[in-house]
Structure formats: structure tokens, C-alpha cells
Length: 172
Image (cartoon, rainbow, N blue to C red; front, side, top):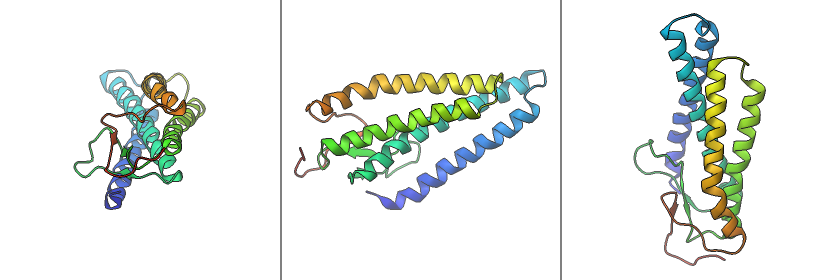
């Protein structure tokens, strides 16, 4: 794992959370005025909140991987990768894969509940944030649950952009 990239990833996501918080403060202060600016501010705030929800989903996967002792690879290049890390299917086993998968599912559930409890009702930004986050959770469930279920049932580890298979013994 490229642990030297971890501080950069934490700083990137911390900055995005700070920007989201600043947008919420501006939205709550100026968001009820009429005109293009308040509507634009509400839209940006909702979109940024959805991005934070996605990142928290990815951090949930990473925490699940770490808790299971998985080998993961942090991005070497730019910090703009859609994935926070790549899971090593050649060096990790089923239990580790399932723990990594569960971390994302649990994080998504916690984020949706937190948004339901924390977002101010009736605001355009809240509707956008919650609607897009729920849509994203449904999309990731549709994309991520079938491979996790197959691995749970004894199937092969998945492939794709979020995975890498390092040479070595594949664990059962």
C-alpha cells in the first residue's frame, strides 16, 4: 500500500468537506433570496453534499478493507481517481473482500440516515443532496451487491477498474 499517499487523500477529502460546510453556511444565509445566485448556490451545495456522500462510501470500503487486514493499493498518480484505492484480489481472500464490500454498504446507510437527520427540510439543497445520494446508493447497490453475493456464495473474485491482482498466492 502506498501509505505516503494517505495524507494527501485525507487532505483532499478534508478540504472538500470544508468546502461543503462553507457552501451550507452560505446556502443557509443567502439561499432563500430570489434570483439565479441563491438557486445556483443551492444546486452547488446539494451536488457537493452528494460528492461527500460518495467519498464517505469509498472511505467505508477502505476502512472495511483495513479492518480485515486486506492488501490495498492507494492511487499513485493524481488525486482525481474515482476510486480511493484498488483492492488486491490476488493477495486477499473472500473474507477480506466481503469485509471491504460491507464497509461501503454500512457507510452508505449511515450517510443516508445522517442526511435525513441533519439536512434542513424544505431546502432545494437538501432535496438535491438527499435525492442524488439515495440515487447513488441505489446505483452502487445495483453494481456492487451482485459481485459481493457471488463471492459470498463461493464465486470468483471480481475484476475491473477497482481491483488489481498482484502476483502471489490467491487466498481462498
